[in-house]
Image (cartoon, rainbow, N blue to C red; front, side, top):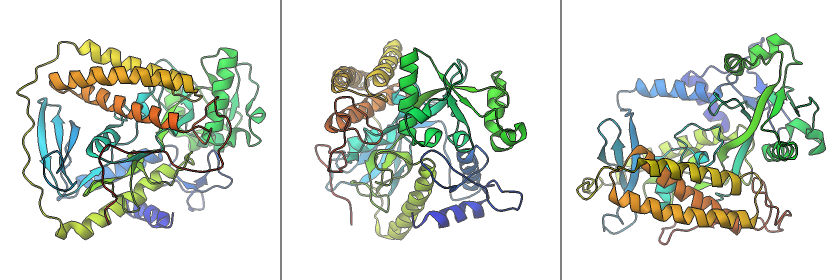
Length: 450
């Protein structure tokens, strides 16, 4: 990325406290797929350091109003208002405090909603990663691409009380070893790079060994390193595991693969523009083409920063030329009622995440994908009826969006008749000669704006 360095310099100027060596140079680490140390980081919690620093910066700006406790329902476009053109003019937003939908009109709208890994039973992602932005953009008329490439992180902490806790790939980068329950290593049998093989290879190897042995989990062991080294490089992981009774300076960490990153998403150009005018997308919700079929570790944060800054620059440049948004009707709740069937939502949520894990997971087959497609079509019809008749809730909105993105993932996977990157199917284990993106097109859409 030609704008990568300036984005990192901007973070440093903004106050992100990146880890330094004793000589005060920034410490660089490496992760799976890397042959050189290239990653600037803040101990083992870089994302947290970046997000908290930038949030505090935004809170200090008098021209920025942060609103919490709200969930997007859908985007508003000219097409939905029966007006000419295909322009995004705002969104309907559910206020979780009073359970009413608010109207937000805007000249520019940016989707920065993260990925869709909550579609899977096991994930490293927080609860909000339910594909909301991707689903809303699709309904608004945006193309999506490469949704079949779901990255499964090889090492999520396996513990009944550890919800979605990721064991960073840097543990393997700093010498951590993957082991079977008997303490023996196995990665050398799958790839000459061993523990530093790319994530998809490591995840498939762990999945293979778990199924072969009938094991619930395997182990990641860095206890052969000095205790001070472990505590200095991985303070967050050390403290978290210790809280569950696991001393990683003395014993291995129980791990299991989990859905981690959505490499596909809403198609955008180099300015983060989508197919719908005045609608931008940045971060994991976007498909920029930079990740290809398998994301290189650590590139996600850098991509998010570079494209976020590109979107801001483009909006600033165009701001004076874009007219105010048209009037839009308030959300109509006159024809709906409160649901007395919330159990349906929870059951459908569980069913969706189970069959996505079983049929559309690390290793796929055409028959499994077809079964998943049949199941998701039934769920889609059921949720569509539910959405039309009942007052919207956070759970209903997330389930509706998860069903949409799951359908996009399944349809994309069925179209790719090869094994490439993160899409591995037993029916087509080889590579095709032609390298192509899987692009799904809504019934109506517009080309990227000039």
